[in-house]
Image 1: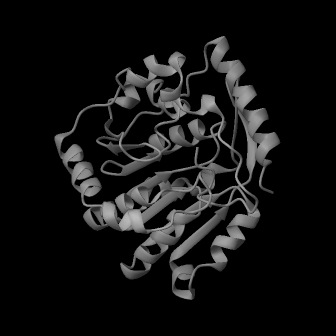
Image 2: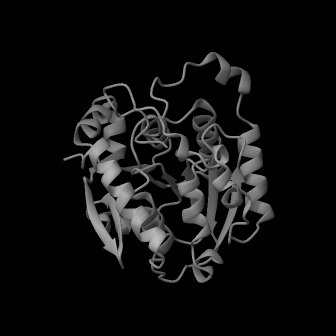
Length: 279
């Protein structure tokens, strides 16, 4: 699970074994179940071309971030290739860090704009400090600490006041969903899917994490039919790429089921104790 592309000043915690669906027998059915999105030969070709253009030899000589949760070189190279092929005028990312530095360099050179949403106040200041004056002019850093929100009986520890970036989400051409922690990412996913415009591309990190797979599996058909999806299973953390095909309807997060309800409270408590709210 990516927790902000390297934001932690201390050594990152060791990931729990249950964090990866391919490591556990109980989650293998979820790992192989078909996702509800439509197929798109055009999107598949774009993703395949962008990912295959990454330089494996160059990645091997590059030192990845010491934070094991940070985006890996293959993901950063894929995002670079995707930028070159899609040329978005506005990028919105959830979770700041390595990707912020990459996107900031690109938007500065191409007269575009980046909105980066991050829960940790100290990390917002650190990432901002690392940007050049030209990059700061093209990047909007948004500090959005985590708060518990309820959808039915389920609880999500997610970004406060997401509505403040709704106008940017509606205009963006490229999204990176790399935060917050798993207790709050489903709420962000539904927010983006409900507000994005046709043609927008959404890159979800941590597709190897069974929680992300469950989020995607649970998206109701009326919304899922508005998106094409392509997995990149060979990526180090796993990526899933969505493209909006038509304006999706407003769909509520599924809230039924005792397991979902109890799991949502357990994840919120776990993430709050481990990471806090970021105020």
